Length: 247
Image (cartoon, rainbow, N blue to C red; front, side, top):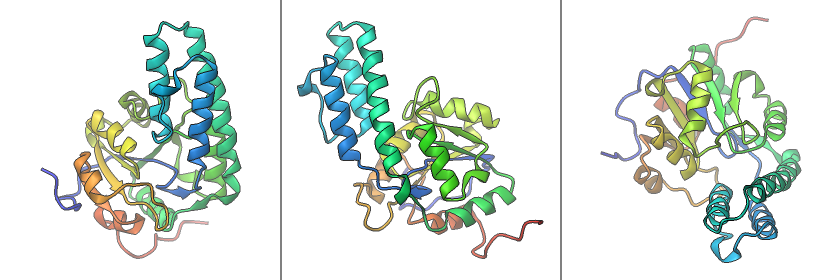
C-alpha cells in the first residue's frame, strides 16, 4: 500500500538509475516549442492533427503519431521520416538550453557518496546523447556515469521498460536489486512497468511540472523525496560531505 512518501526500509540496492533533466540537472527546456515542432512535423508526414494534443508530453506525442499513422495504413517510411525529422528538431532545441543548464543542488555530493559506497550508477533519459554528454561535462557529473542510455540509443526509449532493462543489463544489475529515481510520471511508468523500485523527486522550486507527492504515490512510487539531500537521507547516507578522494 502507498505510504505518505517515506520508504519503510532501504532496499538491498545494487544499482541506481537516475533520470537527468529535472532530477540531476536543471535546463528548463522549451518543451512547448518541442511539442509544436513534433506536431507540425507529424502533420507534414500525414498525421491527423486532431489526434495530437499540444498538452501531452513529447514521449506521448511520438506514441500518438505512431498509432495514428499505423491505424490509417500510412507507409512505414512515413513513420521513419517523421521520427528522424522530429528528433533533429528536438535535438536542436535541447542544445539551445545547454548554456543555461545547471546542476541541481545536492547532486554532486549525493553521487559521490553513492559511488563511495559501491553502488553502480546509470542514467536513463529521453534527451539526445550530444546534449547529455555536454550537460554532464558542464555540471561536472560525467565521472559518475559509466552507464547511460539516451534517446539516441538504438531500440526502445523511456518509458518503455525495455529501455530500463537494457541499461540494467549493461550495468550487471538485476531489476529486483535496482532503484530508479526521477521527477516525472513517465519515469514512474517506466519503473513500475519494469517492476523496478521507484523513488520520486519533487521538482525544484519555480519549476511547476505538475508533479506532486500525491500523484507520484498514486503512480506507484515507493517514496517521494523533497530534494536530493532528502533522497540521500532516505538511502541512509550521512549528512556530512563525502570523504576526500586520493590525489
